[in-house]
Length: 182
Image (cartoon, rainbow, N blue to C red; front, side):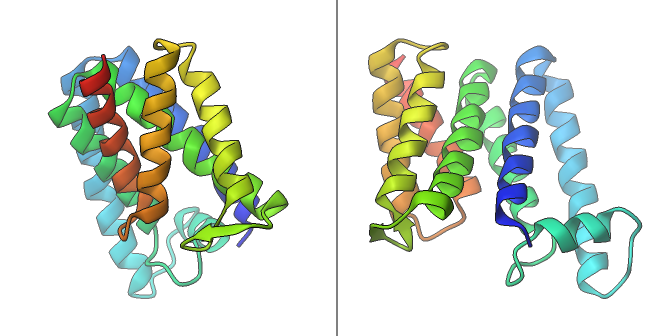
């Protein structure tokens, strides 16, 4: 598994899903996410049972971490997106998914490349700071700077200490922070 490629795909698909949610009707977005989850669970189950599914098996083999269930990260991403879209306005869900895409990907990419100082939960100070800086800069284009900084700071801390998958935690914490701040 190539972690850099995995994170670039995470970033691109995450931003694509966020854009889809922003551009299209809420009901259509909900339907597409539900369909993606349903199909994803079926494909994940089939691959875990040893079936080879053209394209899907190759993507999972190249992009999924070895110790994870097939497609686990993608399923948690879709579940986190779905939760945010159900419980928050779509504009807030959009920003929450932008935070997830950028913070998670940049933190990992910078941490793998430049991380030297471990701070908590195998995360590096360098990766965390890079993820916070890039995500805050991007959010400043969408919301007031103070709200961007607070949202990213709270979300980064949640990512560091969370015992569950960050694809579930990051968008929900970001949406909660944005709801309070905006």
